[in-house]
Image (cartoon, rainbow over all chains, first blue to last red; front, side, top):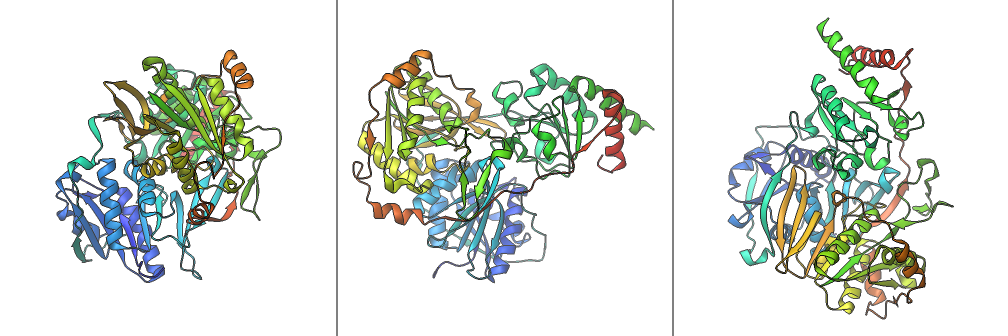
Length: 333
Length: 267
């Protein structure tokens, strides 16, 4: 559509650095921009963020747009919605990428409503149609049973959110330079119509689930909070992290931060061990990208076996101690 | 306090994978015979929150849905769970609904209801998993929105909402009226009670509002519906080789599994 050009990626930073999700956005953004022969721009929103620009250029951005305001120091849904929508109106990109994370999930539908444009959330693949030059937006639907491809023909920018860990991270080029452009957005404190009282972190002990090379996850078949002791033990000897399907989180056996799947985290470890998990797609879509999936279940008909590389039909109470012993034996020999 | 809960009837998300069929020509799902549609589980949890707020503070709870005449069942289900009123917004023109159109129609219907203090929605529908409607609706009605709630309580005319984030949760305070979307961490919703089922079956007729009733111009609906278009729908292949690990007993099979993972260079 005339007047809309380039790819814009909403980039989040932590401690003055582009986050790993941000690098994924810039990775896919670069591919799309090159396919179109247009620029890749980054949108940074926050307070005192001027210093991060160079870091963003080194991940392939051609230009960096900054919306800097002390009111944006911490995320607030109302203020970020306004800042991002207004910046987008000024930049007029052809494609606008946000991550499907705490912030992107929260604001993208509001931005779409404000700008009266379409939206595809949680995309696992993005590409340019060479004939129409439109963005092909691929996402999972029906709990992972089906995949759909969407296009937005008449509403620009083409707005999508990108599933974390679905895209390769941008390559680095520390020599790359670019232009930093400050965008001014009118904000005042009264635009925030809710008040953040506190943030409670439910820290997972040990390695972060998303970063772990080995993930050991338990499901309803674990039967209660006690069973997770054994799961923790296996994860610990393997140097991995513990996750869960939805049921143990809903039942309160483990914190919500353990949840893997459609409404939880996405993990892509080398080894994913699913224990007592029936294998509903709503869960398995969170671990599909794992290199090797092992399923342990006492029900030989469990669906999880259909999406696993190795199947062990067994009661986990018997299997896990044996696995732990064998691993200890292997590493000590 | 007046609470409105927006609900959607969907294909049962627990449908066995083998029964899930699509029509690739029409880019749509073929409803599976013998598996009745259900209330979106996240919407049932939104009703649960509304009923808990009603029990604690007193409230009138209205459930509303948009669709064809065949979605009346989902409103009856809401009544059987204990909501006070149900509204069906239904029109021939509302056949192919996407998030934008649905949010637009709901915004008009809710404006007709008039007085409300809280709108609740499920965090997303377990069919398309987009998570659009609640947020778009809140934006269209110009309401403060808090998403992904795992607890909602009321004190001194303000809602205290625990909003789920990756690393835990955040506590927000928001006044009335507000829109809140409910996440699965709220816990299992109540089942319909015996009396509730009777009330739903015997109760008064559920009001049905047409496009005209809520002042929706059909050309507006057409314009909004083309913002995003599905050009392809297919069943992905996520099968893996599924090698069975053998052994004379569980201990032996488990040891064989670990040895195999080591031999394959996975650990």
